[in-house]
Length: 128
Image (cartoon, rainbow, N blue to C red; front, side, top):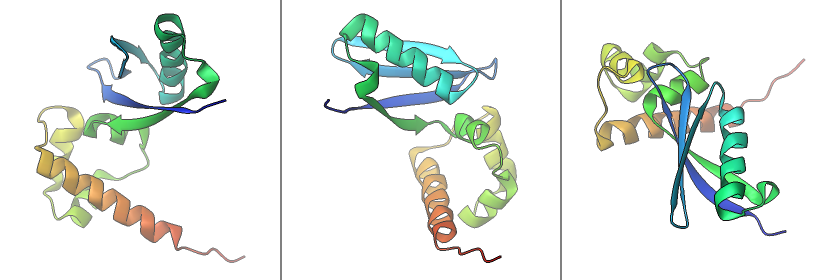
């Protein structure tokens, strides 16, 4: 079976639900859920209903807004990420809360910082 990679844009709603959208074919499909995995399942159902894309063949590429990212990965400490990014922690908190939206440059700076931290973590070896 052929895998279909589809971008899934994930945002946090005012109700703190994850809201997702997918553009496929001629359709813009949207739904919400309390977790990313639940959102994925709902979106796969919509893709089947509207486009007859088999749920087993779908692989989503997650595109998070800053607020949804920090909700999904709630173990990330905002002030530490801001420090690594060379940003004001208060400003990053405003992005996370939705009070302000980051510019594309600021969003990319946050993304680069998270990727750098992930690369460092991949090099870690734990001994017992």
